[in-house]
Length: 161
Image (cartoon, rainbow, N blue to C red):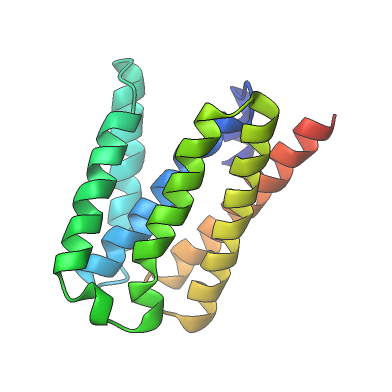
C-alpha cells in the first residue's frame, strides 16, 4: 500500500492526507470506545477519499470539518476522562492534523520532510497503542505502523535522491 501511495507522488506533501486520516480514525475510535470499530472507520475513509478524488473534490474541507466535529464531540464526551492513551487522541489529532495542514503550505522539500516526520511520529503512536492493546484493535495498529513508517522513510529517501 505504501508503494501504491507513492506512485503518484509529486512530493511528500501528497501523503499529508494519510497522516490526517490516521489521526482522525484513531480519534473517532477513541470516542466510540470500541477498538474493533477502527477497521470500519478505515474502510469508510478509504471509500470517502476515493469518491472525493473521482469527483475531483478537494478532500481537505470535509476532512477538516470532520476533525473539528470529532474534536468538539470528543471534548464534550467523556473522552477527556478516559484512560490516558484514549484521551491522548484529542491532542494527537491536533498535532498530526496540524502538521499535515502546515506541510501543505511549506515548500515541497520542507513540507515533505514534515509529512515524513509526522508519519514516523504516528508510527510511534501506533506502536504504543499496539503494545498497550488499547484504543484500536491490534491488527489495525500493526498495519498502520508499517504503512506510516514505510511511507515516512520512503518520502525521506525520495527527498535525498
